[in-house]
Length: 156
Image 1 (cartoon, rainbow, N blue to C red):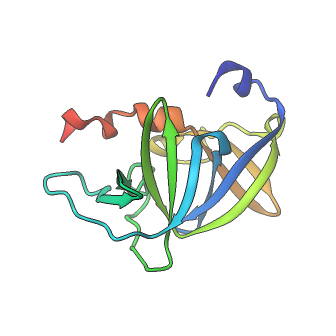
Image 2: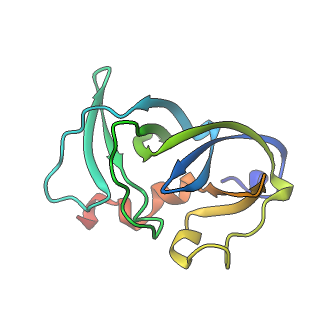
């Protein structure tokens, strides 16, 4: 996130997704598109969170289950799952979600720090927490996720 966005500008839009019963927000500018679960080709000798690769209109994308990166149990793949294609600094990949809850406008001034609310491992990738209608939305920091050591190819 840029410094300007961290300080809180009203009116940012996020895509809200559900993974293992938790709600996560993704900056809509980092979301390329949402697609139904495609046919996945497994890739040997990769970490468990790398589900494989898939072909979308002639482009090959890696599909991740970020549950374990976020310190949650691995997600069980179901035919009803959705894939969110993310773009960051000329790199694209897909993440698996149980469902898409929609797009929301948020007021960044209402974001609470994630430290102490989520596990230390999850806090590395959560920029803040927003409470909405008795539910918590954990705002994912896609820049940190893409830059994480877990996603570096030289680690596997």
